[in-house]
Image (cartoon, rainbow, N blue to C red; front, side):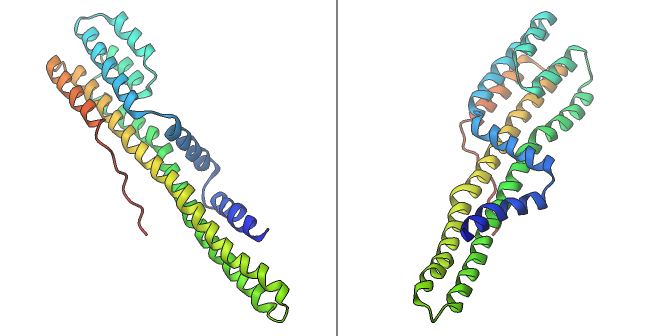
Length: 228
């Protein structure tokens, strides 16, 4: 009972006390996107649609370009594509991209923070459980039948706290961090490509950019390690 409360309830309570409900909701949204999303297939789709969109713009086929925008689910692509069709200046596109990019990545950043904090809380609660177990053990030194439960609480809470931290919370935080970096690369690819289209750069420059972007998707991305 003590172990369940300390390792299940207390870390969640501390999470609620530490973060606003909006941040917690955003964190779980980031977790869902990290578990479900596929950055490599997303990048392949973006490369294909960016190239088709650029050709439609250069050939002055706005209806075709608009249809490509509607087919692409990426919010950055949609917004910048529509702005580009309205002949918005490249400088304004950059400002819009900065705002959208921060909003897009905030869910992943919140997920890293919240699950990283849970990874810190769980071992700490395990140590508190160990202290409680030792107190019970010392309080019942004359009753040998009660020594076992006290020792069990002392050992199990530490074990389960470390288990939760290193097999659940921290791996989830690292996964979300990796997905954040991959999503940032895809966002940068969309922004760079849209700016080249807006500035009427030669098509071969765009093709080179997209080719390099596709190759970058094959390189594993390592999130920064959490400080001890």
